[in-house]
Length: 258
Ligand code: 4GX
Image (cartoon, rainbow, N blue to C red):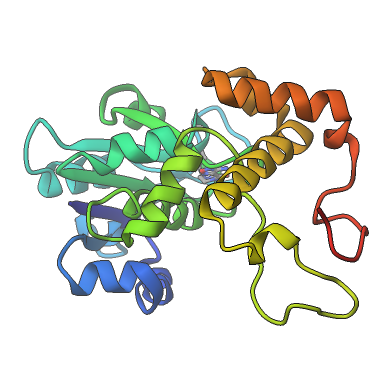
């Protein structure tokens, strides 16, 4: 898969590519990311990308010509997807990450200033994406988030184990708690079941923890789900025991849990 990023701060992306799983995906050739400087698509001496808003008011607006020219120069074919990062966009989530990862080419436009000339949204892009309800100083951090999250959906980028777990978030539940050594840390133990060696039992415990956490912290996620019958039973037993009202592992409860 290829991602093209259009920005006036191309140097901001260096750290993002320099380590971790994204770096490995780039090295392996599973992902190709090209960062383009919007100023390269201007024709004036000052490489001007922004201008004052018609109608007056504060701030500057990204001009349409360089953005259109950049996309037209970069776009490979009609199947490529073009998105503008903006707080007005559709909320980016795991399902959209998966959809975007199946495109051959994704072009992301990072806006700055007060925004981008509306004709970009009106007739250049396939849509606008928002990573959340807050205002960033520019679209660049949002583009990192989108590329990072979708890279995990490219086959071969993450190992088998994490893709199973990724599937479990894809199924819409929060992750179960994880523990490693030491067995006792500052008086806090590890759930006994994890030492049982009984993998069916461990899987059942993890599933129950996932459901319980989701019910406590993100009941909105459960509402969207079609649960299997055994999950429904687990959920009912959690509710009956009132477990979802107890502090979870983020709470202050200490010691070995059951
Ligand atoms: N999720 N921002 C974009 C400038 C801008 C404004 C309007 C296009 C239209 C953001 C977010 C975000 C701040 C990036 C404003 N560009 N992007 N920028 N939240 O807050 O994606």
